[in-house]
Length: 160
Image (cartoon, rainbow, N blue to C red; front, side, top):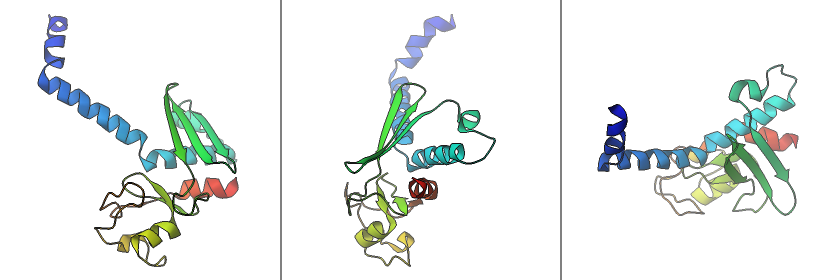
């Protein structure tokens, strides 16, 4: 009897809203800077002398780090089908990100470029940015409230 009720429950308005919310969160997770930082950690872990590998921690990942003069991209394939491309070029200085920081909108910048765009001193850091400062790419305000220092990504780029 449960199988007969399944379409009635999941195709109702509340079920459809729940499904769309889950799909939106899935997209948010794929665009999260924390995922990029996790991938950089996996690559750094595989390159180290550690006996523990990323496959043992996270399962199989397909990772391609392409650093060329035309463009630097980190490509990740999750679960064999979900593909994520992350540009490692700062949209302000148009060079490979140095001391990368991600804003809450997901855009990645050099620390110095992000500070310049937020009108704060580098030694003060992004935490002193005004709450109405906008992302230079998407123009969303309030994105400097919780910047993510991407230290694993910075370490990866230094080693390559």
